[in-house]
Image (cartoon, rainbow, N blue to C red; front, side, top):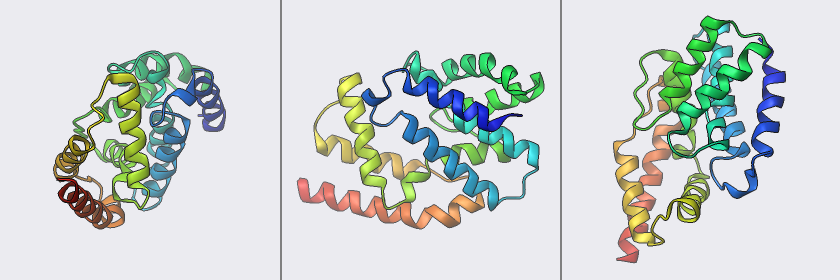
Length: 196
């Protein structure tokens, strides 16, 4: 499994597809998810091969955005099927990576530890101090590309609903991010109340 070569290939792919026009689903997000996955892997008992598959899934999970924003996880799976054999992944490993990619679809429904790690890594920012910066990048992307409402009150209400219904799955993510997520939820509620 040639993870460094895969990382280079994914970086080139994303950057070649107007990465600067996506404020959230871009290379920075991909690398952020990879970093979060590394952190969770280091705090979790997981075998070496599975850890490598999680890393590969983290790198590939948004590549489908280079072809379509609709159901981009399925598009990411198609790209993964093309790229992974050339980077030393066998058919069984590719099936497992594709399962991990699909686990990141909303609503998240992981069914094993590896998929729990990738799901938690994908939404790691919810419990961090840069939550507001990242969430507003997503909002701006939706406004620019999906016709999302510019109404900030609507956004804050949607964020409250999302944060209240979201759960981290791994003990590591719960320990690292749950307290921060609850703090961010409280701040969003204060913002919403002050704007009403």
